[in-house]
Every structure is written in C-alpha cells, then in structure tokens.
Length: 387
Image (cartoon, rainbow, N blue to C red):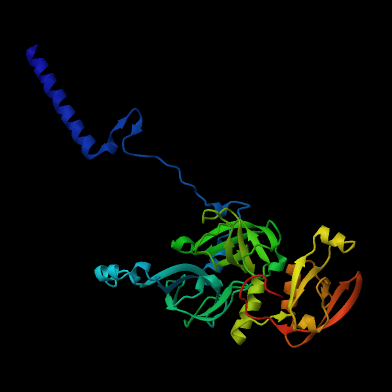
C-alpha cells in the first residue's frame, strides 16, 4: 500500500512540473474555465465608415486646402528698459552694467495662406507687425525666409513673399454665397503644435462694431480658433478659401466658440492693391460720423432710422469744401444706401481718390445731392479718426 502511495505522489509531482513548464512556455495550449490565457478575441470590421451608405467626410476638403496653409515663425529684438537704479552712483559702483538696459530676442507664432504660385502669402498684420525675421514652414516640410510686401492695419491683413518653387496655391471661394449654418474648417498652427484642422459652422455674417479693426465685416464661426491660428485659412466644405482667421473672443486666451475671419473677397482686394502698389489706397471725405439712434431720429423728426449723422467736418477737407455741415445726415454714396456708420465707411473707402462722387444728404428734412472731390485716406494714427 505504501508503495502505491509513493508511486501516486511521484506521478502527481511529475504532472504538476510538466504543467508548470507548459503554462510558462506555451500558455496558449492551456485553457481555464473555457477561456484562453493571454488571448483576447476581438471582432474586426470588414468595412470602414466610408463604405457605409450616406457617410459624409470632410477629408477631401481638408486635403485640398491643407497644403496651402503655412506656419509662420517671427522674431524681433526687444529693448529692455533701463533700470532706474542705474542712475544711482552707489548701485552702479557695485553692480556695474548688470542693471543697464539690454536687448532680448522674442518670437511668436502664426499662420498664413499661399494665394499664388508666385510665392505670395496672405496673413494677419498683427502676426508680422514689427518682426525682424520671418520664417515659413510648409506642409510638405520645406522651410524658407519670407519678406513683407506690404500690410494694411485697417483690415489687419499683410502680404508676404517667399521664393520657393512648386507652391500649392489655395482656391478662392465666394463668401457672399455663405449662409449661417454652413460647415467650415479652420486650418492653422494653434499654440505651435503643428498644422491642425478644426470644424464648425458659420455662426453669423457681417459682424462689425467689434473694435478689432477699422474695416469690419467678419464671418463669425464656432470652429475652434486659438492663438497661432491667426492668418490661417477658413475654408468651406469644398476646400475653397472663404476667410482669413483673424481673432477670437476669449477671456482665457483659448477658444470659446466665437471666432472671426476676414472674408476672402475683401482679403483678395487688399492683396491685389498691396502687390500692385505696395499699399492700400482708400477714399476719404473728412467727416466724423455717428450712428442714428431712435432718439436722434426723433429729434431730427425722421420717419425711419436710415443713414448716418455727420457729427464733425474737417476744416478744409473734401466734405467741408463741398458744403457739408455738422448735423447733415448722409443717406447715400454714389446711389448706394448708407445703413450705418460702418456701411458709410466702406462705401467712402471704395471711392477713387481724385475723382468726384455724388453724396445724398438730408438737411432740415430736405434731400439734396452734393458733389465731393474724393481725397486719399490718410494713414491711421488711432481709431475713430475722421472718415
């Protein structure tokens, strides 16, 4: 009996040792409670989302526009103010020139859009303002320095030029055909992480009175726009450029779903003038205007709020020479109705300096035409200047 137990114990020991070796070297050969140890059984789809009926992807639009969007790296030398203690002889004796003013190198990020194979690139004025050096990084990995052709602070636009072959130019769309609710993509380099595409819709059109720039006619979108996206592309669902991303509304510095883009047709007009002449020329008549409120319209005994109030006239300016006076109400410029001060500013700016234009004004509720010799809009020094 004892011999049988010894044989049984030896057999169990050998079996356990063999099982240990198998589990260690080939766990896939052993199953516990019906499951394979170390093996996960997964189900793989036989088709992708693109193969399903009704699937819509914006990938073609993104692929069409992304090569035309560049990352912009700018740098400038900043003079650190001289420390006031440097005027103290005692401090200067002990610290020497350590507290004196010094020059520091600062850098910033932005985006731009290639608009022509000749190397012209659209971006924001504030992206390249006062930059000493500008470097572009293309989507294909190429890098090159760029120079400023010209800028227009009043629309916050700038045109750069880079010397590289085979540049993929963007296709311009028509912002006038946009409607609230249309899908748009914002492409740029947010926070310097690299080229990024975000999606949203057109939230509003013709946004103005925001205090961002002098000439405002923004496309508002909820596509995420963050620092570094400035100057990048806003494209429609076909990958065509409809705007240049310019600003965000934010209290924290990040996107809150309210972004603003300059319409592509306005950007194109500014770009063409800058490329042709190096600057933007606009009409000017030398008046200060004010929107008509309901109270003002009532005080002038007007039946509707239409036009803009001439609040001031520059002495010796075009409007003054034409006989326009403070208190007049400007209702039309070259037969185009003036809705408010913003539309008046845009209509006057579109006039050609040196030519005569016909304005329609109300004086004592009497409508009268006035011929004005259009002047050239001076360079801006501060906002709310005479128009």
